Length: 381
Image (cartoon, rainbow, N blue to C red):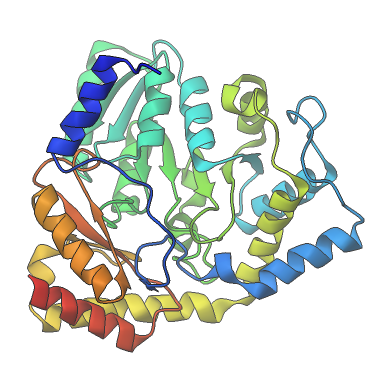
């Protein structure tokens, strides 16, 4: 069957640039690439708890059967959302099918025509896609640069009085692994009466005594208009939640198209989320071990004089800048040949010249594995 030439040309361009994406094959290498930060995706205890919970509640359904507004709002939804809201000290919680769905649904429906969205230039693609679907005007500010943010705010409120402004950031950035100064950002937000929205996808399970995320760890939850938590990382399952006021929840149920026009999560998926949260509350050892491994990783890379090529990060994501798609792919391949599952992040996913190796640290990585990985990386450089 014929394929459009303009699409073929785009694929050929990717091949020439060494940036063509291919689905990786499963492997048994030492995991330094997944977002399974505290090992919940492989937890037999959580798997067994989900199975037993469904049996105890006589739930034997494979699917939700429809949108939550039609037939898919099964009984587990309210129990799980109530538990999540309590856990995150939020007035309400609304589950979405994925982090992508949550961000697209939120940003395409909440900001209105005449409103202004100011977002960090490194915000995730799902946030950007949701903003593009919005009728609001939007501008990006320099990464974690709140002077630049204030400049944009001051210019906007000079032009239009009573302007509604949404400030958007992430508590842990997925490609750099760094965190904004949230205390300073909330102060800027309050100063100009803005609505602050924070994606905490890579903070859940990583920050806080119970892995509740960076915002609660800093006791800033009451200053945030909306938090988006996704479960495919630290919680080890699937889905996402928007945390905020009960009025926000009602609004999203009525206007977020990715929520309204999508079949709900299956009872098994929602039970996995609920059991994941129960496990977060009692499995503090995994969270503590992850923190120790992050500190150890930073110590070893400093000892080997590698810190200058790494982006400064105290999260589970540690990125080393290795410019050039060809070079970074070659080093990643060599690391894999040595038994370490490390992935290269290529342009255009990151800007040209910012290609990198993205090392993800986990609670189940041993210190010996971390030391061997960094030593191998150092020798390849």
